[in-house]
Image (tube, rainbow, N blue to C red; front, top):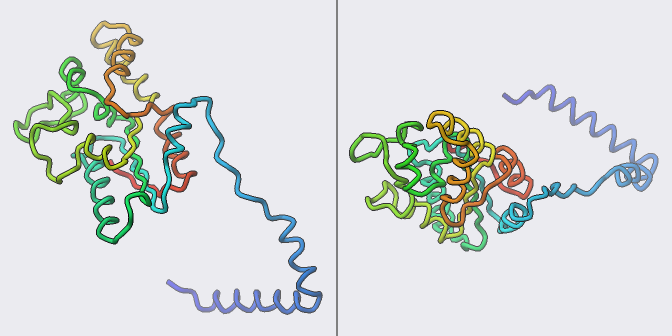
Length: 227
């Protein structure tokens, strides 16, 4: 609710400052402000040149990062398509739109090929069901899907063709490969290597999901929690 008394008081305070400034001369009043002003610092760079080059692809006027911590019924991909469609309907050129999807925590299987889903039973572990059979998914239904998705063009491969960038959390890959390695009597390092080798084309490994969410925002992306 608007506080009129506080607003009036604030205006009076600002008016007093303005009068004071006029009395001593505007140039002398503005000088300290100019001296104290600092240019906005550039985002710090990591030692990962591939990650930094990936961040450098973020451009355009309208930039969004979708923070996906779980598969959330495919909403990270659906909302990416909706954002593209909405901007297109508004007459915004595709070159003015940048979308980044950060797959972290329980969303990391979305970054991997079918073979890994089958071997490691991601559908069962991450509670991702096949919408048709209602049983745990045996493959990544968002990569070159065999069945139509609820929203046309919301598969990862189709989104990538329209410039959507996907990143996957390295910390989550390390953490969950350790769990799977223990449960399956495998070396966690071997599990992680297999996961990294089985990532979908064009998916960038980021130092951590939260790190990438921060760095994309520092490059102008607005934030949307996607699940």
